[in-house]
Length: 228
Image 1 (cartoon, rainbow, N blue to C red):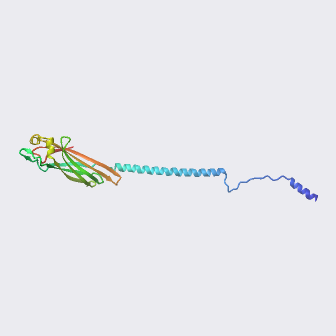
Image 2: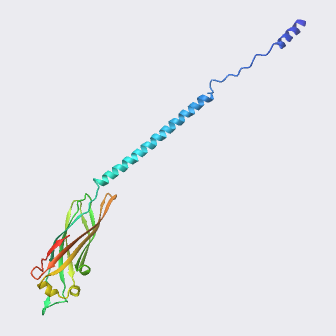
Image 3: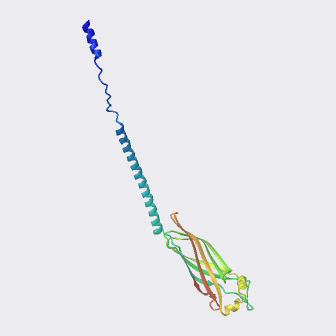
């Protein structure tokens, strides 16, 4: 009995073994977790930068291509307007040495329109006006809606009526001038329209050619003219 009690007292007197905490192998420490998160962040940022760079490069390429095409292949030029001939269809009517104000005379103006573009030229209207001096309109004609194909040329014949009363109001000595120094008239041809390519490239067109002519009794039907 005494031996058993002594054994128990010895066991109780022994100090307890120290307690050690060990880390489980399946739980990464904080430093490894930080490096892992850092690597993921760097990779995501790199992908974002590469994606933005690709989009910026593609946008710049498209913009440069568009500019180059608009300045070369799709560059639109103004069509060419040429006045080929001006002729009177009939002379002024003279009665007892005076101009018959009840009868007007008509003028034919033949023009050529050349479209140098690889796109259709839509003509909205063509206007020809005749002036004595700089501001007095003595005749006018308007022709609308004409289509000129790509690289094509179209001839138009414009007919205007010279109003005798308006011309006499501006030039009372009409008969004397026709028989003497001649009568100076100015014709102005205006063309308005639009050139369009693929509904993207457009050019508004406004062409004008002024011609100065001198009429006399000898060349009344086919007066000499010069255009600018």
